[in-house]
Image 1 (cartoon, rainbow, N blue to C red):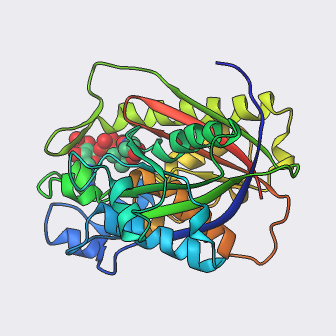
Image 2: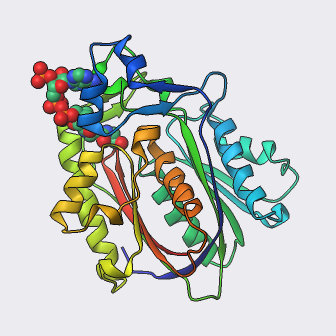
Image 3: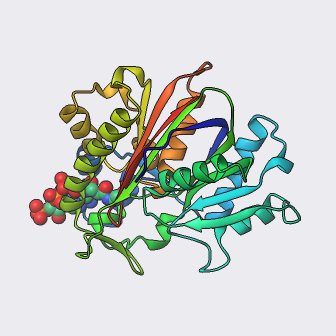
Length: 313
Ligand code: UT7
């Protein structure tokens, strides 16, 4: 894999989660669990779940928020990539449905979905950045969107308490400005099915946990080393929100203070490919000025996939 630095501009972000909320106390009525266990073992207090919306509805609503936030000229959009493992249909892709819902069906737009599990948004950024930097495309919607609850077995306490639904979107443009972007997206293929989805999500939690900690550490170190930056030059790390203890272990092992990490897992649970996008949008909304801040997105997922993206605001 070549080391390739890009310049990329995040023009706007948006996120959307469904209105309905399931708290840990709701799960106490469904399976043999407790609020105390879930909070202590994962950091999750509640998650948002769909009633009648599908993945493209969530993606569309996140994209619309990003567009409206900056009154974006949608005639510029020529690329839509949606990262998801829970598409509305096997075909067409969620990206095509988003194009239609945005009223852009008559515009030349390359649309496709990709599935890299919970690392999906970082993979979509990797592909989208390369396409923008090729000079062929000008403006991309990069979306992570999931209705994970479609695949949740509400009789399996090992998994059902962990997941939620949502969507996060970035509008990206090529730029001549000095806005360093460097993205690393990789995979450690495994055949043992430690984390897989057929009708339902199945997981060897302990094995995934151990993989996750090592993978996030490696991705953070790799991106910092390749871009010749130290952690003190990064203002925030926005990790995949799967388990607060995974993030705490990474922080401890890399000797990084927890205040460097943006955490919102307590409100959403694990929203798979949407999680980093939702967290990024919330981080950007949390204060007024971010100019030229360097941020680091990092994630892991089934495959096993993992990666990190260093972006400049
Ligand atoms: O995006 C990628 C997706 N997945 C992940 O990131 C998950 C990574 N793994 C994890 O987050 C953790 O491994 C879990 C949260 C899934 C589990 O935490 P743990 O500390 O690794 O617990 P454990 O698997 O060692 O289970 C401890 C006990 C078990 O009981 P026994 O066998 O010791 O009697 C489980 O059956 O906790 C039990 N348990 C529960 N108890 C109450 C498992 N789920 C629950 C539950 N409520 N919901």
